[in-house]
Image 1: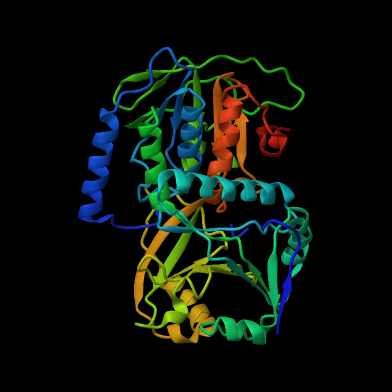
Image 2: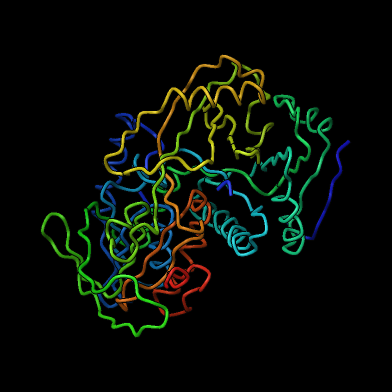
Amino acid sequence: MTRRRRTGRGDRAAGLGRKGTDLGRRRVLQTAGALAFMNALPARSASRGPRVVVVGAGAFGGWTALMLVRKGARVTLLDSRGAGNTIASSAGETRVIRAVYGDNAVAMRMAIRAMELWKENQARFNMVLFRERGLLWLASDDDSYLAAALPLLKVAGRTWDEMTPAAAAKRYPAIDFDGVRRIILEPAAGYLLARQACETVARAVVSEGGELRQAEVRPPRLPGGRPSKSAAIDRVRLDALSLADGGRLPADQFVFACGPWLGSLFPDLIGDWVRPTRQELFTFTTPAGDTRFFDDRLPPWVDLGPPLRYGIPGGEGRGMKFGDDTRGPLFDPTSGDRTPSAEGERAARAYLERRFPALRGAPLESAQVCQYENSPDNRFLIDRHPHATNVFIVGGGSGHGFKHGPAVGEMVAAMVLGERPVDETFSLRRFFN
């Protein structure tokens, strides 16, 4: 039987990496048309706010730019390949969004704030980007991640459903719950339409008064490497960015939200504090007419394993997406081989055929290679450059950053405009000697 546990009044699986391999001619034309339209719009009047350049139109950069525009800044959003491009870490069709974060109360609170902002903004955009379908958590041997999360959810006023395997099998008949010891449904969770979100936010930056440009940035010339915690730091101001085409782009403030490229833009400071790893995703076609796999009957799911695996069911005409959260080998996001491996497909099939028997022999619908950009402790990097008073670094999504985009953007915009200090939780200083 299902046991409903209500914990209040309100309601790890885990920018610029590849989640898709072919936009298609129609999408390319639509994107080109949108860029032409956006670049034709006037920027804000020179009498308004500070000039801010944001480099990177992924989840962190796009939302930061939009929040800055709404605060009156004159914003230019740059991306070398465009928002939602296929080699961006923020690319791809879908992402899980959830508030369960083990014992990490900071990440939980940020995720809850992000959910609020996703809902507010999709209403503003008149476009559904957050599909609130719930998230099913499965624990077999070790349920410590869930055990640590539930008291924090209770304090935050969130609810969850806990059910027996028999009750879960009746409710979700597509899943074989053999070996699963604990099952939790997080009802306020779900999934995001990632590529559409990146493109929509970029359009909003322009329509609300900012500018979007497709341009490649050269590494800024700034002093120093990694300072010690005790050493005095000399700081300078960056006057302008140097572009690959020889141009210069002056501004008052600069935000670098460049995902796996942060280390190459700031090799002496960031370096291996951002380590891109190769990750494979597989989507399998679900049986024709089998409504058990529709996203209104089967929520996204996370199997805590180990290893941790996750999936997003069919929605928007797609099949079952499968990912393994295990960090892959180091990966070059610019020139790395993005051919999915036969071994990865075999492992995906072996798991899905056991947990979802109706997917035995299912056709492979698509396969992609993307990357995580991992920080040493899987927490974000959000800080002022230690050697530059007007340069901010935002990254280290570590495979779980996309969902937090609006909350990160809100935080960074306030930091850039001097409305709040750097949050020590995400400061670079935690890695200084």
